[in-house]
Image (cartoon, rainbow, N blue to C red; front, side):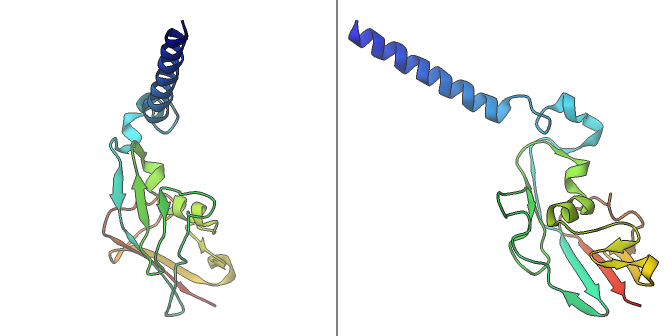
Length: 159
């Protein structure tokens, strides 16, 4: 009876572990459920590992992008390791369009971004702000989707 109880407890523990593992890796959640995400919003179903560059220039001076954005208190899939402007997008499974936007990066960073403002600069205060990707102007920076290897440049001329 004692050995039989060990097998039952061991089997139950193994079943619990398998259920937990499958639930965490394959279970339904808003970010990992294809039905919840909607296929038209998907960028990838098996993850991405991209490295676009972000360059912010204030009055002709290149601003250093801080290291550790998205790494404080956890590990956000969108983050920085270096201060050279490399933005890491490291998503393991389903990736939506919203996951890859410049606006999302600024949310993770905790900084302001709109079509007319960035950081503490605002066109309503006389500052001139431009947004380009590989030298092509973009007009909706918040919803702009990063791509691997590109350079996003934000240039500010203060008043």
